[in-house]
Structures are given as structure tokens and as C-alpha cells.
Length: 298
DNA sequence: TTCCAGGTGCATA
DNA sequence: TATGCACATGGA
Image 1 (cartoon, rainbow, N blue to C red):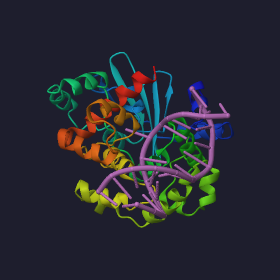
Image 2: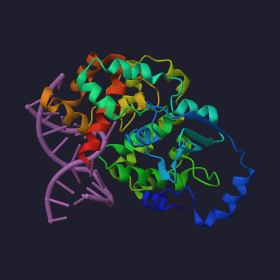
Image 3: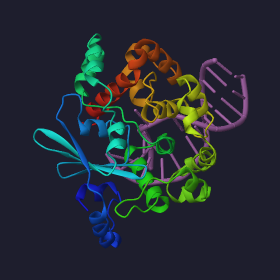
Image 4: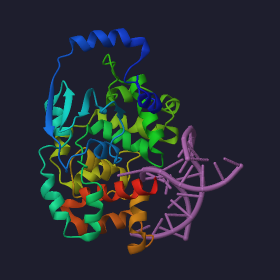
């Protein structure tokens, strides 16, 4: 286990399962894909811009877990290598079908947006697992990122399938099989009830139907889940359903627009920003969020 | 010790 | 529809 993994409390490797890990590593089918380095894809920016919680830094790259799959990203001099047994899944996950050159080019029409875009030009909007994204962002409400990560890792370690060398994110069925007290014991605090109640509903949900809904109708479905308000719903719409016509407004985005719009309610500000940025709202939001948070945390 | 965090639910007006 | 408060927890 590397230092960064220890610091994050991420259980990618466990000493007790080290032997099993070695065996499984040998058995595991070695697959990978790679890409030339590009201005419009930066693994660090993509992972550290706040849209995802299950990753950690390793030597020359990152390790990412999504649902029950994992990928190692290695940054070499001229290219980026993705080591994973799930090539197709992670090509979609990192949104490599979208042409970010065009998106970034369009952003140059607005000098305010262009500045943020240049700062976070390497960000890709991930296409994450729906169940994992819903639970993760319910946990994220009124919470610090290190604590969000810690709660998620405890859930995975205690409830997720043991994949040999990491634990999968728990399924909705697994989550629904536990009690509210279990989620309190995981450190979820007052969100324990939200996780339990939402798990029961997600067990019965057909996401293939949700995928076909218009953004507004899909948001209404998400808002019926306990612990999901406008902001969490918009994060799920953007990071799991690839709906870029949403603008999640949180404390950081409020700070960004405070001078221009004053202390406007989040929902009102979100609607106003979607009217302004349309289909590019999601990208603009991530650039602005990443820039504001990065500069203030320096 | 106090503040605050990628907010939400609920009661009240 | 808008406003205000309570809600767990732990790092800074």
C-alpha cells in the first residue's frame, strides 16, 4: 500500500488479503488501452475536480474504482496508458467519445468562461455508475470531501463485494438489506436514513427507462429520492446520466457568482445559468468549480 | 473551541 | 413560494 492510499484510508489492498491479491493478479486478464497526451484530457484535473470520490494517486498515475471495476492510469512521457480488464467501460467512463476540442473552442466566446476553461481544460465529465453516484452525492451534502471519501470507503469495505484486490461499491440491494443504524455506524450521520430509504427505492428502479427521459423529467424522478435535492439531483444528472444541460449550484458556485447576482437562492441561480449556457452548462460549471476551489485552497 | 463542508427536509408564514 | 432552522461528523 502506498502512502497516498494509506492517507486516503482507501482499502485497495489489505494486508490480510495480500496473498489472495497476488493470486488474483496472476489470474486476471491483463488488458489495456492507451492514448496520446492531449491538452483536453488531464487525469489529475478530471479526478480532482470534485465529480468522483473513489480514486487515489499512485506512482506515475492514479487508481480508479467504479462500481465493481477498477482501472490504473499511468502517465508516460508521450502517452497515457489505462490498465484495466474493462476497456469499453472505462472508455465510456472517461467520455472519450466526446470531442472536447470543440467544446473548449466554443467556450472562447465568453472571456469569463474562457479563463476558467483554460485553467481546467483537461477535465472530462465522467460517466459514472448511477447507483454509486446517487449514494455518493447524498453523502456529499453538507460534508467535507475527505470525510465523504472515508464514508464511501467504509461502505465499500463493509458491504461491497470483495473483488480480491479491492471492494466494489455496494449494490442497492446490499444497501437495502442493512439498517439505518448500519449507515450511522459507517459515519453517515443524519444521512443514514436517506441512504436506507433511497436504497429500497433504487432496488425497484429500471434505469433503462430513466435513461430515456428528458432532463427535466429525470430530475423529477431523482427529486423523489430521500436526501436528493436540486443540487444532488443535478450532480447525478451530470456525472452519471451525462446531461450537460444542468448547472449544479453549491457553496463554491455561489461564491463565483456572488458579485454578479448577489445572494440568490441556489435553484434560481441554477435555472438562470442553464438559460445562459444551455448544453454547455455542465462543462462550464466544472471549469468554474475547479478553478474557484483550486485557487482558494492554495 | 468554533467554524464549515459540493444541502436537504420540514415547519411556518 | 419563500424563509429559517435543525441535522451528524470531523478536519482545519
